[in-house]
Length: 126
Ligand SMILES: [Cu+2]
Image 1 (tube, protein in one colour):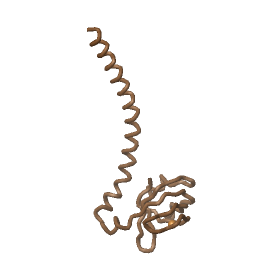
Image 2: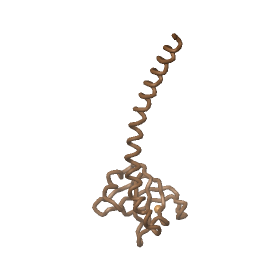
Image 3: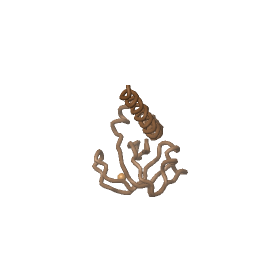
């Protein structure tokens, strides 16, 4: 009998420890899911347009300047393999003004971008 009580007690303890760990982890998960939602939204739209999807590229870099009025961001980005680009600093157009919430000078970001006409357009900021 005693061992059963001990076992039950241990299970209760580990269950509450687990619950604590989970509730801590859940918060992170919630935040990740929110970020992911924002990320996947434009990608889902892009999924229906294969020509856009085919020319989507990723770059990681540091924001050097933003111009919300013109809708541009200047990024010092690393090499982009899909375009054979070396690291460089260049200006992108920004597809959605909402992205400026995530683009501030000196911030390190990963962007998705596509070539549209003669411009490179940021389609997602992570
Ligand atoms: Cu570039």
